[in-house]
Each structure stands twice: as structure tokens, then as C-alpha cells.
Image (tube, rainbow, N blue to C red; front, side, top):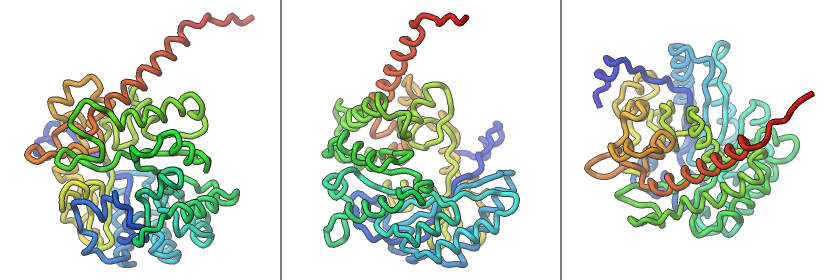
Length: 396
């Protein structure tokens, strides 16, 4: 990837608008599918447990600097981990107030937190209400489905604790903070039972994540045959959602595919060809790419940059970052030959990896994504055709 040549041909990088701060590098759960602790990159072992106040200060200045240099009126900051609530109420308060003070008055900093929900109590919720921090919770369905993977180190399931946290979050005084539910797909869990278990909490948004894997290390149930188990699982939920709840709850993957089918840009890195404009700050201050790359190989997310010395603009000059911003130019010949490539976008970047060819491959979920996209396209085409066939209504 020759970034200089790209610039000479007129390409310009997209500024970073989303900053993920790893405020705590450890977790109080031991989910067996976790890309942070159970997959290729074990760099977490070298990280300090909590992001220091000094690193928070450096990150705040760099975020504000990047926004002003690129004339960004607003940025989004995600408090992440590990489990971010392990950092404690006062440390999270310090992080939010420090970043907001650095950005004021000309840059608006929005905040969210992604948590497993186990520690979600009134002290945290009062802090989030005070500062307008949106709360996303990870949950994998009903108790049986959730506890299949999301357990404590002693093997005890976490469902009941997460449920208690969600019940607090959905009380009237806190419900406005509820950002949504994040669920990792497990083929052994019934899709409709999973969906209904999440729907019970009335989330404004859900997202279903494909388990991390690639061509070297395929995800569970993804075999080199013609089957489409993940596509079928998602289609079952799409059909139910589309017929009954599409106007009540947004399912991010489905909504993004629909946007793309109507020719709009995607706001998700899971599908489409929109430039990825995300940076991660680890607890020690190292700047990294999106952390799902840790599922691929040791060091895949690294940049060798640090918030104490390197502006975020420097990130944009890295070939590995440019590759995620140049759209169809980064796709393989196989992807470009597919009619669905502008919607699919070859899927999530880490899922494309194969030894020898790197990331210039279709997604390991290629057939699943194609089946899902084709199904959604056909459903929309059917309904649009039906609308066109309806007789015009005469007024007056």
C-alpha cells in the first residue's frame, strides 16, 4: 500500500471521528470467545490494568487537537475495556470531564460506554445521567444462551447479574441512557428465542455480531462447503423483525444493509465501503487500530504510535489504516466480480485474513453475507413492487 501514491492521485484520508478508550484492560468475566483474551494477540498481559490520569490527559489533548485540525464539530468517545466499569466511578468521571474540557467550547464530545452489565449500579448510572453517557450492554440472549459463553472465571454464568443491571438501566429515570444491546451469534442458540430475550428489555437498538474468525482460523460452524449457517440464523431474525418490530427497534446490521441497498453510505464497518475512521487508545497510551484485529495475529492492531507524542493525523498516513479507507480499491478480484460487493464490502476487515494474501480476500463469511443481503434485497423488492401496483388514490 503506497499511501504517497494514493495522495498524488487525489485520495484524502477521512479524519477520525470515533475514539475508543481502553480505560481498563482486564475483565470480570471469562467469555471463551473473547478476542481480547482468548485469541491470537495476548498483548493485554503487558498492559497496565487501568489507564492512568496522565494518559487520559494526553488522549484528551490529542482528540481535541485532531478535531480542530480537521474542522470536526463533534467526536464520539467510547469508554471500553476489558470491562470499563472496573475503572471505577471517579476515574470514569475524570476521563469524561478531562476530554470534554479539552474539547470545549468548539468541539462537542459525545460519550458512550460498552459494558457487560455486571457492575451496572445506581452510582454508575447517576454518573452517566449527569454527563449524558449512552450505555450499551453485551447480552447473548436468554439465560441458557447467554451463559453458554459469558461466564465468570469460576464457571458461573453471568446472566442474572446482567439482567439485574439491565433492569436498573431500563428504569424510567435512566432509560434515556440505554444505547442498545450487543449480541454475539451462537449457532446452537435458537435465533428467535435469542431475539425475543433481547427484545424483552425494549432496547432502541440491537446488533448481532458474527464470531471472530478468518480463513486460517475459521469461526465455529463455518466449514468450507456450500452451507450458510450464519446467514440462515440471521434471516430467521430478519423476517420476524421486518414483519413485526422494524418500526420499534433498530437492528444495526439489517438497517445498514437496507441503507446500502438504497444507495446510501454505511455507518458500520461490518458492511459497505465507507471509510473506517476509528482509533483505539490502550491503557498504556498506545494508539491502535480497531481491536477486533487482535483476533487475527499478534500485533495486527498495532501502530507503534503513542498519545504522548503522536497526533492522530499520523495514524491516517499508515498503509494499514489507508487500506480501510480506500473502499473498493482494497477489495480482492473475487469480491469485485460479485454484484453485491458495494453492499457487502467484503465484510468485517479481520474476517478477510488469510496467510499469504493478507486481508485482500473475501470474508470468511462470504456465502452467509451474500445469502443475507440477497434475501433482504428480495424482500424489499417484493414490497416495493406491491406498493407500485396499488391503485393511485384520487383526492377531491
